[in-house]
Length: 166
Image (tube, rainbow, N blue to C red; front, side):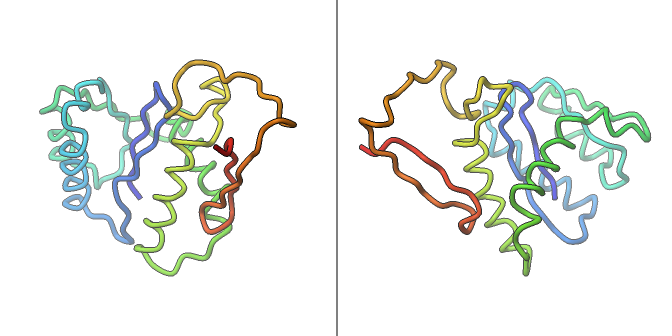
């Protein structure tokens, strides 16, 4: 699985998943990402990646062409990529360890639904208990006795999201 995390906002994007990623597949995923980001690609200054052999010079060139500096993590240093390791642990604990995946198509569908929850509803301590997609203003304290709350099940019923009913 190949994913991108925006460190400043904590947003995560899944670029693709395959059982046997090759260097050509990874380069194509990088090109697809640059096309999807468009003008937003200019906001990125660095790409941190590990030293896997599938990340070839062509992969690095895709990002360097957009002015993004590619940084490789030191060998045998899992803490050097702590944000990515933390996200992998979170998505496994909250989602993937609880669902039996039958194929890549189902995996991408479940991850897409989980990412919508992660980026749009799940509270993050680093964001002041707001999700990455919410604005930076603090939420008003509401009287729950006077409001109606609506629950919505996501990720095949694994997670419940709550919001004020209108």
